[in-house]
Image 1 (cartoon, rainbow, N blue to C red):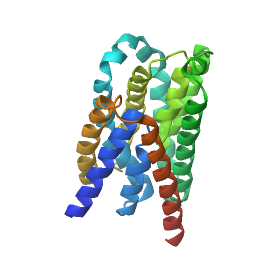
Image 2 (cartoon, rainbow, N blue to C red):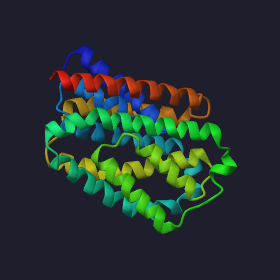
Image 3 (cartoon, helix red, strand yellow):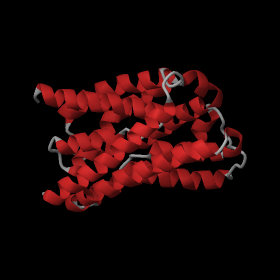
Image 4 (cartoon, rainbow, N blue to C red):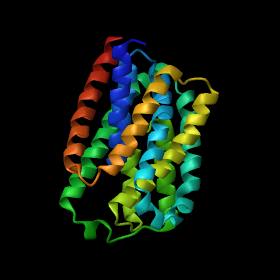
Length: 255
């Protein structure tokens, strides 16, 4: 790998780690970076999943003070997270490469729109109103299973989806919610990553560089989440996501 490639991998994964710690959407950055560097779409997605996994662990550590008072939630949503992540990863490798390559821009766009909708909702609804109504445990399990299924298949935007279900179950502390979201994201991606590794679709040189960046970014993002303007960060993610979706679409249609 050239110095330019290493820098691109390191910077994209560093940014993704920060984004995932603060709100989610890191795959929107790492997946297109790997595509533009020449990896096939499915292998880029698998490599991105493995690379971002340690970042989730480091950001969970950064939120541990808040998460430690909500540890019972680990047991509640762990099983649907593992089951959905496993099925989603199997579904990905059953998808023909050309089909997934053409789906990729729309998946990035979908994740970006989720990000935008969540941001608008956060601006329009007060914290007390967001958490006024809770959903039953069975509904939370089904919702989390669907999120995990999508996460094992692609992954971008699952953090946002999980914040929604945690809020619907009555949690109020955004830092605790972010920590729990990172834990369940780690569970989903651990199962998917293991399957991708066994199937031999991970590009390890690229993954190794990205692991370093994502781990540092994940911890830094959690530690500085209280100081950095969250809405400005979300706005940047939306702009980047829309731009990436357009570029991916144009790139795939020129191949």
